[in-house]
Image 1: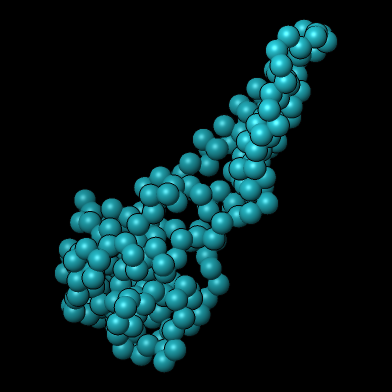
Image 2 (image 1 turned 90 degrees about the vertical axis):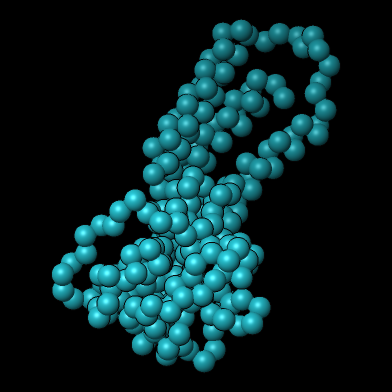
Length: 235
């Protein structure tokens, strides 16, 4: 590629990264906390494109001394257009059922309101149920949102994928469901379940990790959340 083409691709890439960082698109790839770095990277790429154009303009037209690069080098643009045109779905039930739970004991637990219903993430409920033995969950109505996964024998789980950095390292945290479960469950359906803590536990069939149960009293389908990944309790 000549310098003009390089500058154009750098500008497009930088603009795409900026677009992802300024919208929710970046949540399909990286954790929300990396947004500032994405914005900085996009700005640097655009500045580099501008510097390339300035260099080419000051250099002026010159006869190419080397032979032309093979046209196959333009295949380097395909990942760029894929990033622009195709937003990948968040990881779902297939990844969850083929990966063991990533639940680990946290260093501490945030304070919970003394009264009223609790809104917890899948990871927070699982950590409190397993490692804190449900001390602050007993007798409290609890609401949790996650997607459905079914193992080989049909056991239903409510799952949220946790991120350490990006979607490439996402790992699931799982809750086994019991109680008033809908008679028909489709994998990857997002549910908001309401219910209560139960001390019952099981083991993840993939890695024998601890999986707590949740006793469901009501379950309702909900849209996919703005950020489908769970960062705080990924372990």
